Image 1 (cartoon, rainbow, N blue to C red):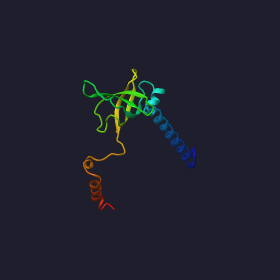
Image 2: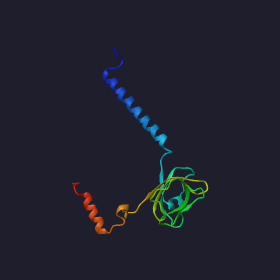
Image 3: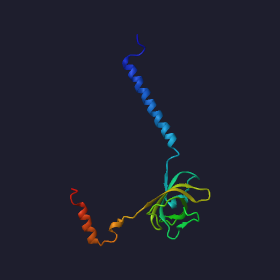
Image 4: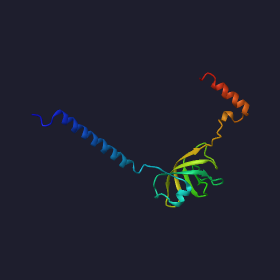
Length: 156
């Protein structure tokens, strides 16, 4: 006589499979707990700063007149601000995105250093809603509309 009937064997296999899935989910959540990037505005960072070294994202506007290239030529320093006039100094070493300019929106990924400066490891520049491709910048509105019409013919 078999120890378990076929129906009970299937039930045991289903329970084991569910336990393995739950264990895998818990293991994945545990391993990713330090990988979560929290998003801060400058005012939020000033009020309640993250722990030193914790990976976060800082978003705001690059303050006018704050962009400075360091003597090494690859490090820049600037200030990120928001509408509440909170200011966070940022330092970034690397290639700067093309759309990164003073007065533009930016999201900096990195961590707050012990000296209070945000050490960015990645910069994401945001363009405004008035973006115009380079090819259309020299055209007037009528010429741009005509070019757009010509490029959409036959797309239907």
